[in-house]
Image 1 (spheres, each protein chain N blue to C red):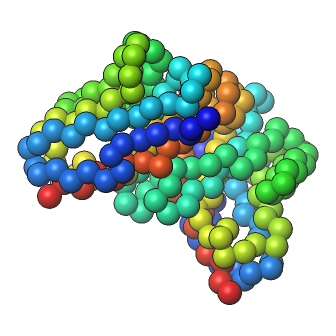
Image 2 (image 1 turned 180 degrees about the horizontal axis):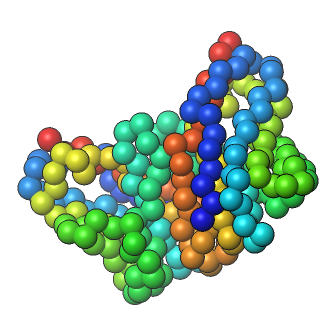
Length: 113
Length: 114
């Protein structure tokens, strides 16, 4: 039973480009959470999704960021027109339900140059 | 949500016991206390969770006094591989989550020296 898979592990984008981060939850998990970790800081919640639904996006920046978790395929965190301040580690976690343990992936490190 | 306060960093030597204390003065009746561990370049990993008194597993022990306004994560006989950031989380639901979200602070950077 593979863990939470995130790809790519490292992503370099020029300012103004789009970044697409993928997260495949653990088998049987239908709840996905995205977190962002800026250098020297703790993880900050961004968005909580279930299959085809956004449950809570209170941590998402109002512009340029979007997330989806389609019926088939991985969850995608999309950042349009990236800026240097978007450089961070983005972690995905999945769980089988709201009150069950969340397992984290190894993260995607986005560098904007 | 109850705010947590923990030391920014701690140092220890191999073989010693390490105790990391977390303050959560505004903890609510339904809140659980959960600790996560994060190694460099990896996602956080669940260590232990408790509600009151003492909880022990194969990795650590968690001590929670009667007033629950603080908790102490105890790591017995640490090794170099225990060098990591340790996060204390307090949440209304099981596993330290509320509506599926986990709230992480800065955590405590534990460095174990040979």
